[in-house]
Length: 100
Image (cartoon, rainbow, N blue to C red; front, side, top):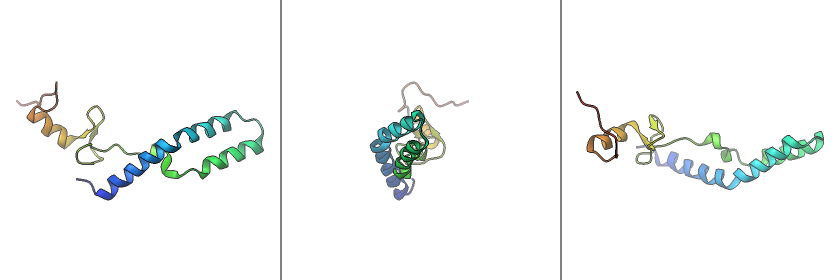
């Protein structure tokens, strides 16, 4: 189980990304399309004033059950430990645990 502070920090980042993603997109496209250097600097200064944690690259994939960030399977949203247990108990449809 991950620390609760890391999970809470991740939730805050998700909220910030959702709030500021449209503004970031607008500033970035306007900055690329602008011809004059002064206007471009002004647009990019607005972009720099947005919070750092509102970047999508700051998000980390975490297990839905435990919050573990390592060994994450995107198709299930689970870490490898939980995926193995759930497959063993037959809780994931279409997934079987190999045994030989």
